[in-house]
Amino acid sequence: MTPGKAALIVDVHLSARDLRAALEDDVRTGLSAPEKHIPPLWFYDEVGSGLFEEITHLDEYYPTRAERRLLTVFAPAIAELAGADTLVELGAGACDKTRLLLSAMQAHGPLRRYVPFDVSDEFLRAAATGILEEFPDLGVRAVVGDFGRHLDRIPTGGQRLVAFLGGTIGNLTPMQRRRFFFDLNCTMGANDHFLIGTDLVKDTRRIVAAYDDPGGVTAAFNRNVLLVINRELGADFDPAQFDHVALWNAAEQWIEMRLRARSRQLVRVRDLDMDVVFEAGEDLLTEISAKFTPERLERELERADFVVDAMWGADEGEYLLTLAHPYC
Ligand code: SAH
Ligand code: AVI
Image (cartoon, rainbow, N blue to C red):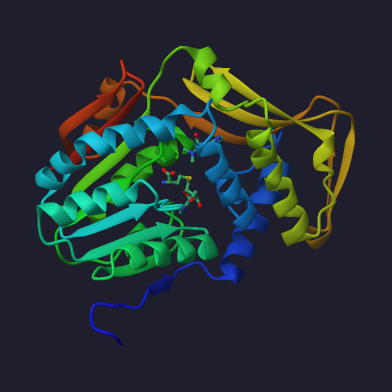
């Protein structure tokens, strides 16, 4: 191996067989429930990951730009406060904004390692390879896993900054979120830090517009989950027969993305020997995206034994970056 040209290491904790078993479970449970639902994790095959990337460039989808602006200004302060030699990134996706953190950490001190963690195997490998090309002296160890199940597989050692960007925490239900914070805290050492990006509650018209772009990219992303089920489980959903719906749930303070049957649909899921009926107007809930206030986030972190070090907000409460560490 050429000095300074490290190879990409990939730990796979979710084999194709594990993924299929998890999808079978989720489809069996979610499509037979009185209110049909499917977890958002299934959006992210190659096509879905690409569509999400397109979403991040839409005029209406403000969270990515807001988070990038915050990182551009505050990454040096984050790097200094965290003093980390390892960046772990949960739900890393395209690892795009990561570059801002990596550069700041490199400028600040002894950055050694980057650990992108994502459920989407191929997309993760491609993104991690891109990082390795830009930061050839960095040890890049990608982890294919589910952050709902495999947080204990995050490589240990060194002083770590665990980043969870993009507002992806909002896609977890309150119970999953509570458990996620608690489990993450249990895997962290006294000198590790946690950086979390959260979208904030604001004018609901602006939020809804971010999930219902006129060009239909978000609709295609939403419908992609039906194509994933068709391909993986031999189902026969007709995506054109489902409308993309984005609703603000004021009581829960979250966006709901739904697929609404235009007319009565009889769907066969061949590999599960399952027949599913959608009445006209019936919904499949495909995603929630919770929006926060700084106070609520701090309360939730504290309940999971985190201490908040700093919060940085963008443009009159548009978006929030929070740095915390485990209370020991
Ligand atoms: N952090 C990036 C990408 C956000 S998109 C950004 O800020 O732009 C959400 C990412 O989380 C996707 O890459 C998706 O594959 C990943 N993801 C979703 N659910 C996951 C899960 N349960 N475990 C691991 N990764 C998950
Ligand atoms: C990844 N996640 C934070 C996005 C969100 O905003 O909840 C996913 C998304 N869904 C529709 N548009 C973007």
